[in-house]
Length: 117
Image 1 (cartoon, rainbow, N blue to C red):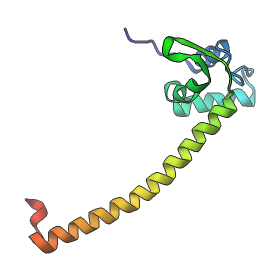
Image 2: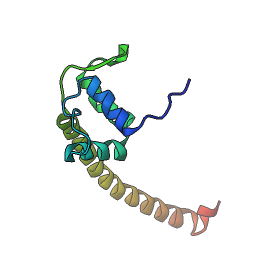
Image 3: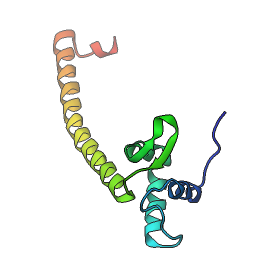
Image 4: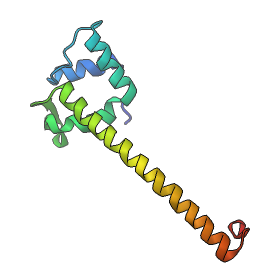
């Protein structure tokens, strides 16, 4: 049975009920806007993987928070995003180098039109 879509406000309310520190911000405050943007830009389910480490027993359905705050989870998420960005930069260089060398090898060993076969 598919789950219905949940509004950002309802997502923040759910986090509050579960005791997520920092989710108890007032509607209309700057912090609320930041949390709303963060959820809109990244999605509740993507972020839930980061806050699982601060929950009681999520694999058994107890999603209440034992520790952690929005700031802690955001720091972990930002670290992961920065690491991913650096890795992608490095992989892009490797990919271009590999494609260039493969193209050279195919052209010189099999002929300039071998790629068409």
